[in-house]
Image 1 (tube, rainbow, N blue to C red):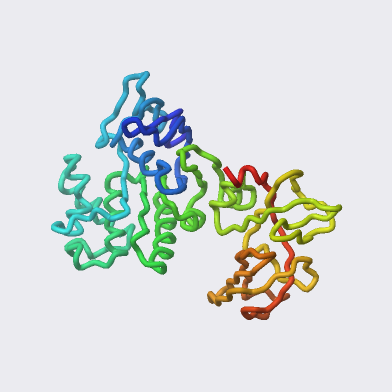
Image 2 (cartoon, rainbow, N blue to C red; image 1 turned 30 degrees about the vertical axis):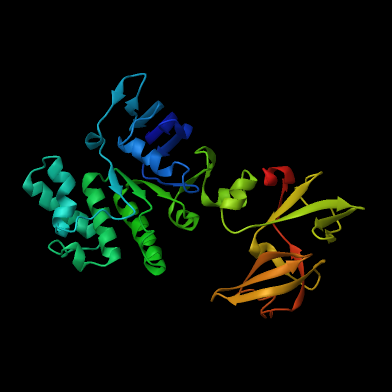
Length: 359
């Protein structure tokens, strides 16, 4: 059975339609990431599921039962949907102890004191905050406050938790460790998690499936991380998921060339996936290879060591592109200086109609 199902949901603020005809099924015990650019409707979708706003049309189901349906005249109130929520800004009340913050959803539900105490202490244990129940939020670090927010969500529901940009306000090291903790907690409890973010890196690390929205709030691709990275459905997906270069290309006199300030041959044979007519090559920085047998002359304009990789900008035919090389590259273990001339070849590149890139 699907834990959550959206069927043809449209959501608007006034006359402004944010999400149109949105349909998605989320299975039990699954972590699904909803990602996309700012303003695409990610949080709006979560608000509709929680019952904090009503769709203009469509239906929303939980465990096979409608929680919203205009046609069936169903609209279950938020407090009866049994959803835990973790917000970007934690929303931890500063005047309440850790215990009282976590207990708040249970008190609203009218749960007995003994049940509240047992569930709060269990939630604290799940987020590794055992013994912190009498602390005030001002005595906690940002990461600990975020764990309090997660524990509070777990007391509201262990079945379904929505996390809306839950780690954005943490530093880089803490963000990475929090993602690991969220995954371990989910595996222990079997919680279904909807993870909303604009950070595709976090979604790739955490989620079983990723739902990518465009700026108009429409789904452009749903799949595992490998699907979106290795089998992007469109130029938009390729561009959104990670760093990318786009270079105009064309065929000339039987050669396949970069079309920059002048034509630069890069392949003597027809590349796989080549598109006839105005086109462009999409290539990841890691797939631009510095190699003695490369056909494309380039010059290094910037060079930065990032610990596990070198990050370069190279000038090709009057235009600058980004290139990255792992420090573990045993076939090419030297670094390159600014101003140095190199030769390049491309691997795993993709081709898209140039008209699409200009729209």
